[in-house]
Image 1: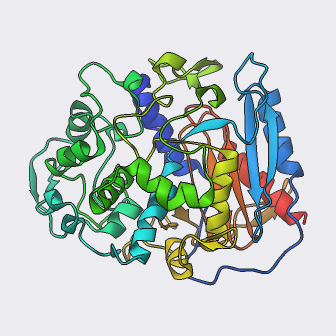
Image 2 (image 1 turned 45 degrees about the vertical axis):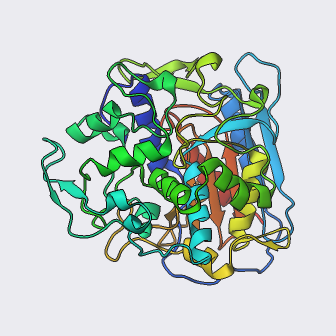
Length: 444
């Protein structure tokens, strides 16, 4: 997915990064629902990955980076580090440094939904109007590029649609059409912070108010007819709130963060001193790449250091490499962590399968699982530079500031990369990481 051809002001910065996040992660997962392998290969090498993050720091692309590598079984992550938490700083990064993970929040929210599916509280093809009745009579824009004139939808939005970006919603960052302008006017900008808002943008509402605003607007597409990057995982968070009667931060704490020991993850950095700096590598007016970075946001305006009004399950979490590695381990091990069952094995298998409605694909020939892309075909090859590509059965997603998450069930490892630069298309980190992982996996 290419970056939007719009000027990158503070608001559009979020658009560029989210669009890049949708298309840049190297994780590419599975056509068939097959068992999660337990064969123990030789230990994963990490020479190429360490060299990659060392190079990114040495070349001044980022001040620092942390990568976590995990393998099946007992949780013994390997942490690779390079650099410091901010340009010109002296504090070295560590597995406990905190990072804005933006859209890497989506798999976490999606797996929390799948836990509710496992418990029988939700069904994948259940209309969300059974929980959120305001979505019972939706309309779809006749031509969303021209206006808000709409007709009734032919089918309901389902839980499956929310998990796979096929509900028909859009993002305020997807362009400047009439629907996107309405999103901005009403403050429907989850994953944003007050410092990003522009004149004319409405204040960020809470999650339930955002849902009410969305229900009063037409959809961009008929539900279940196409993949469109959107606020659907944020609506999934609102669905969990309405289902349980609790706020999304408490839900994620109870269902995932506490069971997995992810004590540093949440919608804001409770210890702001551990939060790494984030940098922007483009001119805010023209969007053209720059040779030097600027801080994305002064710390006093950083919306990730206090509890936000809008709890964004699609783009609002802060986490550390140590914490996210625990989530990655649980996914790699089919829902189990530390001898405890966090997600039933059948539900984990389902979350890691292609959940797209029949006939739909993501980016041409890829599938989509619960909140993350799925490789449908083995793309591995070897050329003069060495091995590259990914096998089938890979699952993952990325974040707007360059963070990456991958679970490779064929080569049996998971990877979490934490670093901060925007827009994430400025440097080919996803591609570079894919090559490095292929070299390390091939060198076992």
